[in-house]
Length: 102
Image 1 (cartoon, rainbow, N blue to C red):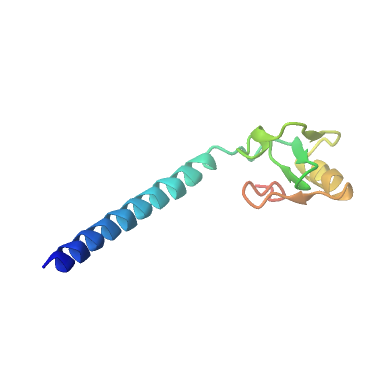
Image 2: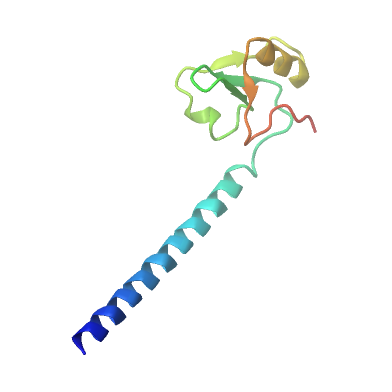
């Protein structure tokens, strides 16, 4: 009987852990969606990060965390600044998609 109780408690504990992990994952993905709802599509300046080799829109949540940003703003349009960043070896961020011009 003691083994049965132990297995029951273990099963309940595992269920609770899995439920908590699922809830945390849902909160995390929802917060990511909200982070990127406010990204501007009219900004022409681009922000690069030497460590990752990526460039971002200035209001990208990842760009805001860059300690020593490289600013691409010599062009008069976003397309010109994208070209400048690519010419210097940077690749576009896969989250804010600075290369997509709306």
